[in-house]
Image 1 (spheres, rainbow, N blue to C red):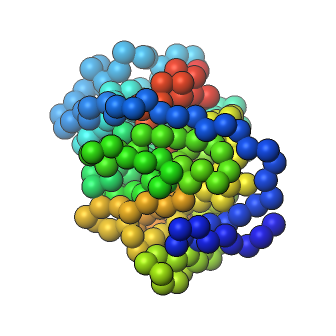
Image 2: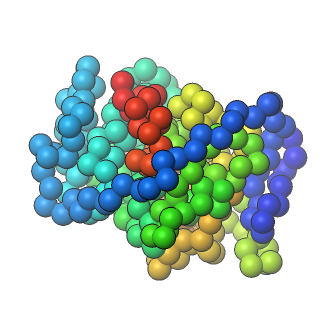
Length: 261
């Protein structure tokens, strides 16, 4: 294992790679956003939760949907909560704290698109706030990422569910200058959509190129503002969950592990 790899001015934790999977490219046009102010659960989704976790999903939607003011797709939050509860039911020992980081990458880089929830108490911890996407994901005229991949060296964001592992001292470069922050390693658990996250060095971290006015681009990491990272990463570490959503990859929307079960 090499401690850090500097790519395009941003440091990432790097690991020895096995052969990379081919990139999964997104649909070329981003879906229009949905303003959720005053929305009710009944009109949020055409895909109802099923199975033993369905009541938990509905309870979470009832409690938290009004706190998510804008979404790119009416199923975004439902898919996130379905993934959370389905994974927790199957792997209870891995979900060791109640904090859940949700990012809607169907929204543009200038739109606050990140949230952290306390799923035990059904409360919003922080959000919405700006979040970076990978420079390899590109963007359309509205700053919406349009490409997602699980491949080494792609610099893209990956979609799906991740288990938060340990936090650590992160360092990177922005604008040619070294900066230091806190980082959070992620284990992708959505099969071929994100299971190379650890080996790719995809982590949550603070970054100076993320501000309240908008987000720059990372090497695939859902980076947030520096001060926010120092507040939230210790809560998420060692057993929280992370869910990265976009409606702009049709294969993932139809086959997302945990979220469409």
